[in-house]
Length: 233
Image (cartoon, rainbow, N blue to C red; front, side, top):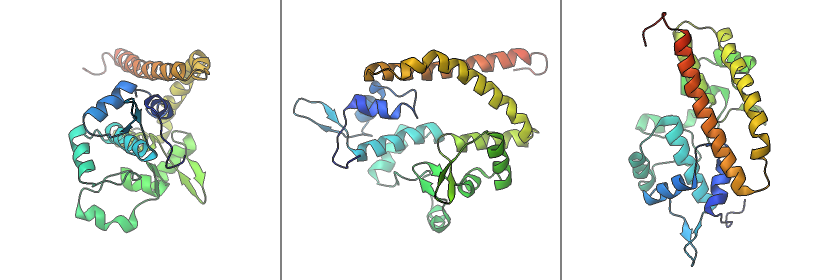
């Protein structure tokens, strides 16, 4: 993308909905109303987002999704310029700043395996086991294997499961269940998400995100039901 290229709000939503299925035009407008975004306006009053605006929006959405940071805190950091939009984590102390020379390889919210280990506290050999099992997947960038998206959240969850007595091989049941579920959903939504109409694709991806969330809730309820008698919920 050119630095001078500007995007309307629908284009912004469509470009990011793959990573943020719950993103809507209304949410982007809300973030603007809270002072977290400041797109330029055309003479007709239409919003136009620059590449820098997109980077800022992605940073905001990832901070909310991955770290549950309140909007007020995000706004304060933006106003203080106390952020690095291309960094995975925020520097909240002098100790963190002093450790910059040891920071993991970062691109957006991308981390190499050593970075994942430092961020999660899980040894690299255990992370390697998760990779071999297919629980997380990376992409090759030069000599480094880089991990994006929910890899860090997955590893943190796996770490806690290990602490509770599970072993790496036990996590395969989650992988198999997810793959089966994905196969069914893909059959239902493949045509919709590849529609030639941009508005239809946005709506389809929004519906897809809703299906994922609803499926998660049903899975949780069914698991509790299946474990009835073993534990009091």
